[in-house]
Length: 132
Image (cartoon, rainbow, N blue to C red; front, side, top):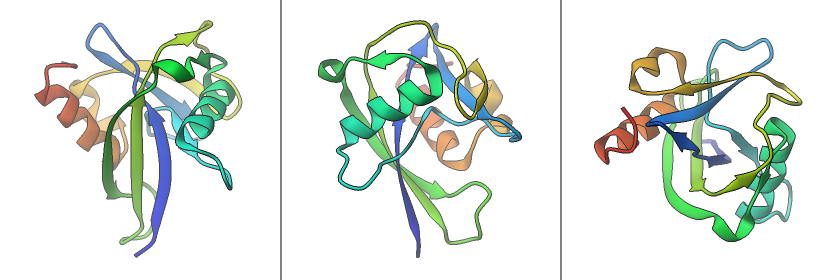
């Protein structure tokens, strides 16, 4: 079984999660991405969020939320994605950058618009009262 190792930044405001949609795609994802060779979780997350959203995460504020695994969206059966999820403060103004076409604030009403692993994360956040 192949596992895609990814990192994600969970930003919650008004009981909604920040979601991103890449250019040419129809599915929203929690922002983040893959680490480069030798990168720590923190370094990869800071780099990915700067590239995608043009904001700077505060490395000292990062807090691990959990690891989530599911079938990778748009990949053959058996290809899994594993996401190490963090929360943390940021500075700057959120905006779509690089391959990101748009950003939206999402909740459990948007389950049909998000990836498989994000559905698991949204349910987990909802069970804890963090999102609607």
